[in-house]
Length: 98
Image (spheres, rainbow, N blue to C red):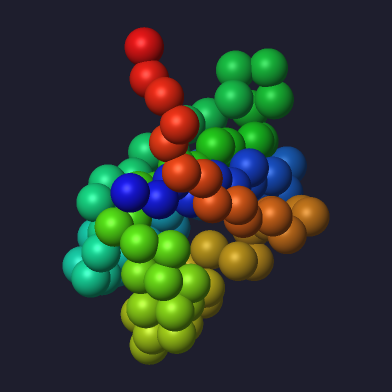
């Protein structure tokens, strides 16, 4: 399992529109091969900042499958205009749990 992590800084005053667009966008990503689940959390201290966590079967399911798909172009059209600055996306493998 791969955990994708991105901190999403949404342009001030656009959080409601971002959440509405994300509600549409999540239906796109949920249909992708290798997708397991996602969570989108809003920061308490900085309400225009969100944490996106997506679980994938493999790194390639995200980096090649999703990002190389027509569905990603839809995702991008719905969401990418909200970010300032554009987020850095990183991937993690679980080491331990408690």
